Picture 1 (cartoon, one colour):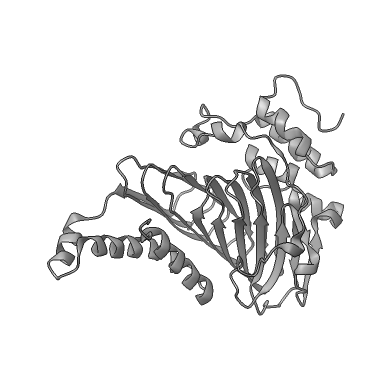
Picture 2: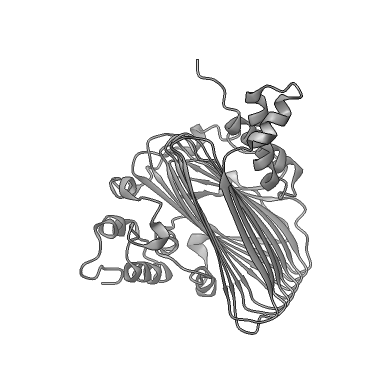
Length: 422
């Protein structure tokens, strides 16, 4: 039977199988996930991110709650945008906007050609394949050639977050040649019960097209969020993607990018702010397979209390990809005695005449800087907050949208300057 398990499949896959959808492309993605096997700590990529609590969840589809009773306006960003709303694994067409010169096709109405695009990956892994296989909602977005979308497209995901409930989303964006588009991807949870969000978003940037993408993750304290985004850039294309990890029990997000022709430019950035016992895992994969392409990356983690932050990044340069310019920086702050950060930037280069570098720093706030500020009348606690905010703010500056950047800076301020508990 299509989608059935082979022998010796790990127990978590048995538990997740009832959530697999029956579209042919999704069954194929499931079979690939089964072959790869469910990740565990013996896998190098999962060494610092335990899934023990995740596999104990009673996996089930989210209950079909009435969206009309939900006041979602207070949960959204409130900016001027084209809003596409998703609730508990469903696309809410009536709550979403029409976008001029942009074709939006719901996941359940895609063609065979479109499903081929959904099944294509830059750097597939078991979790991304699971997201594909279990997706119940999503959209296929196509921007016409030579058109600049006048407002951001806002993909707004709301999950009830009930214990064990799984919500899976699968989106694809194709930006036609000479077009420009901004996309804001936002995930929130209503409950602290401990559900799971799977998110998969692939973006195709055609010749001379431009993409600005921001992802905001604000899940519940016990919610698991697993995301994997792909960005493919054609000749002279440009893409900037910034991921902000604010709230969640376990967050693991990966951005994979691929240059499909010459003279492309990609920027990938992330900020993770784990606290308590949260685990935030940020990963990137960037493949330079054509000459004269440029990439820049800035990734930061600020770990408080007993939290765990992870960054793992790879720049892969193919043979013949001459004049590649790839830069990756990972900088981390540890602000708790039991907090930890594990950072692993990597380069794999098979071409001559390239300029690639990576750098990583992990430590605490600079005592000399704190002393300098104290000598000028600034209290130590305020000095620490100012330095922490400035450290995190460098990633927020990568967001071009003023409204979104201000929102992000306010959220950073709330997290690095927590209000005292009464």
